[in-house]
Amino acid sequence: MSNPHPPMFDLFVIGGGVNGCGIARDAAGRGLKVGLAEQGDLAAATSSASSKLFHGGLRYLEFFEFGLVRESLREREILLRLMPHIAFPMRFVLPVHAEMRFETETPASRLLTRLFPWLKGRRPAWMIRLGLFLYDHLGGRGFLPGTRRLDLRRDPAGAALNPRYRTAFEYSDGWVDDARLVALNARDAATRGAKIMTRTQVTGAQIEHGQWQITLRDTRTGVTRLVTAGALVNAAGPWVDAVLHSALGQTGPRQIRLVRGSHIVTRRLFDHDRAYFLQGSDGRIIFLLPYQHDFTLIGTTEAAHPGPETPAICTEAERDYLLAFANHYLRDPITAQDVVHSFAGVRTLVDDGAASDTAATRSFVLHSENPGAPLLNVLGGKITNYRALSQAAVNRLFPGRPAWTASAPLPGGDFAVDGAAALIGDLQAAYPFLSPRWATRLIRAYGTEAVAILGKAKTTADLGRDFGATLTEAELRWLMTREFAQRAEDVVWRRSKLGLWMSRDQIAALDEWMQSEHEGGPQ
Image (cartoon, rainbow, N blue to C red; front, side, top):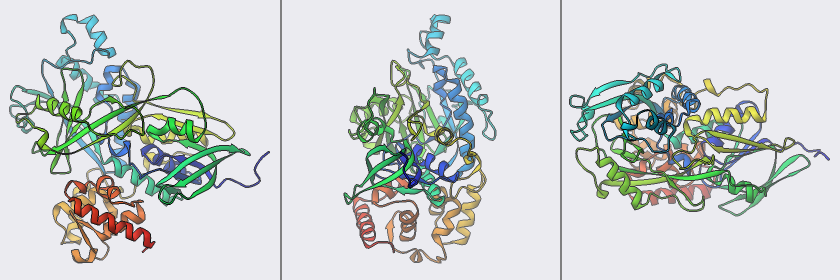
């Protein structure tokens, strides 16, 4: 028997990470009524704890995942064009030396061992150059420069490295502010009519009369309510199995493996804007990335994680591993005292039976059930492929509605890939009280919408209360009313990284102010 009342939503999405918000945006842009529930804040878990890269996955070539690398490389350039405020090209320096080795279980390692047994697992320079040639050409590279060889004895990139490293290759990939990527997808989805509900948990969902009956609980007040939807997407990331089994009452084998990736942040270790791709004697790799102007981001590790309810933290062992790895390369060693911040995220990988977490595929799987009232479970994926994944998900559920996101910039991203410097100059000219770093931060966060935040301000005082580190009341109100921020941590660790400069007292005062504003209702 069918329900005489149409569902409240055509599509309901569980999960406010990059995939969930990407799907909500895509679907809303196709004219669908969309709802999304996130049990915490947007990007509160994995999607704010990545290495913050749009990349093809150079090391995935060792696993012969040519299709994944090709698709990721194509997406990399699409995404860099669509969000030039929060994502931009970056050059990576890959030092070459004789001790570089494959992880022993990769297909490339096994093939080389058979063909060239005298290499004994080493990564020869010629093979790295071959891999970089493929990397330059597999995805049809457009505006990004190709690979070149560096003499580290002469190039400034060699100054931070141990003198024994004399040669390197330099190639292109992209940087992205991962948490802002999520917030802007959610913001655009809401602009297109989606209902975004943060700190809202899905406690149950069942099919009645051909529709999904979904029970929601406000995690702040405990109040529950019921909504209905024609189709349901489970994009809960590390919680995807938990939602499937607990909230949806489904049974079946575990479909994912959880892998914790940890990062550390140190004082700035080099005086240029390029990153380093470092290879270890254990076959693993890490990145040293320029981070928030004053710092260096080092990561990542890969360790099995017991479950989504276990907090993801960078352990002392992981911190020490990253320090030791980096010190094999650095001219001036670093210690735990140089670490100013750390974070960890739990990645969801498709459980494909691979022997190790490193070998597990980074591709995604869309698993659909219940043709009458569809359920789509999103498994795996990587941040570079979030748009393609979102498009594929909506295509699967609502075929015939044209795709659109490949040419639609995110809010604030309607300018050229190389146009940020000009925007920063224009912003300073319009608002002379802004310092160069303040203006840069605003453009890199909000792009062309920075002017809307500053409005008619003539002085810093016109922007309201100063919370520290250039965070003003005007910006904070924008984040609360347009980007779903409710607590201080939402602002200083996700929608910005101002927590790196703010004191605990400043953050506490900010949280108190935000709570008082929230309790008082819209201002």
